[in-house]
Amino acid sequence: MTSRPPFTVSVFIGTSLDGFIARLDGDIHWLTSRGEQAGDMGYEEFVAGIDTVVMGRVTYETALAFGVGHWPYDGMHVAVLSTRLDTGADPRVTVHRDLDGLVRALTERGTKSVYADGGQVVRSFLRAGLVDELTVTTAPVLLGSGLPLFGPLDADIALAHRSTTVHAAGFVQTTYAVEREDQDT
Ligand SMILES: NC(=O)c1ccc[n+]([C@@H]2O[C@H](COP(=O)([O-])OP(=O)(O)OC[C@H]3O[C@@H](n4cnc5c(N)ncnc54)[C@H](OP(=O)(O)O)[C@@H]3O)[C@@H](O)[C@H]2O)c1
Image 1 (cartoon, helix red, strand yellow):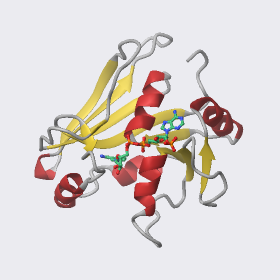
Image 2 (spheres, helix red, strand yellow; image 1 turned 180 degrees about the vertical axis):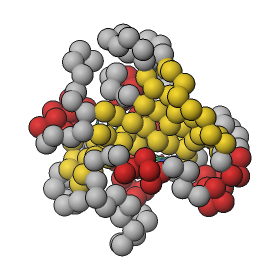
Image 3 (cartoon, protein in one colour; image 1 turned 90 degrees about the vertical axis):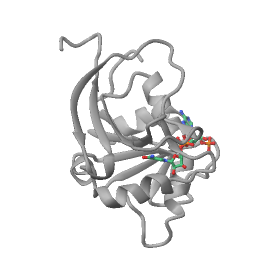
Image 4 (tube, protein in one colour; image 1 turned 120 degrees about the vertical axis):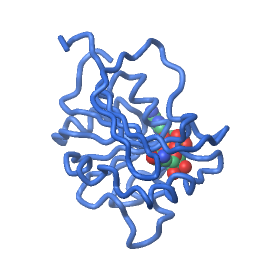
């Protein structure tokens, strides 16, 4: 990534202790069932500072499966990354074919704060050097296998620890800022 876009990108995501965001079949009951005891763990406060959510096609399809009347992104612009979804099929979202086109479109519409969601999308943003802040909420469970949050990188990404909070039901939530070469702190 050569130039910084004029918006921030934050990740706010739940994982198992062994780093999975869903089982291989997409199941997240292991997370949501424990999460019911823990409350929102700062999610509402987080999204109050967000104007745009960017998600992968798989996370979008998971949100659609919540059913009519359960669209969880009211008040946010929703951008979906997909090489195959019809653009224009769902008036609630804009579909983008690649990261460069997405960044251009978000820049043109005056985006200030992006929430990146979905494992593959988060990895794409990390590899492109686009993530500013990561909040990872770890559930007290080992799954052994599943869909990963993190993956291969071209180079290390140095992080600065910001905070750690222990929530009910044994969730441990840690926020990191991504350290950049072009900044002093
Ligand atoms: N634990 C949590 O907090 C949490 C949060 C969010 C989601 N989830 C779960 O995680 C699962 C989804 O995660 P995932 O990693 O499998 O998928 P994902 O990131 O949601 O979606 C992957 C898809 O997004 C598209 N995509 C991603 N990056 C792209 C890029 N740079 N350019 C173009 N298209 C791109 C591709 O769609 P095409 O194949 O259409 O090209 C790709 O197949 C679901 O089960 C969801 O419920 C869990």
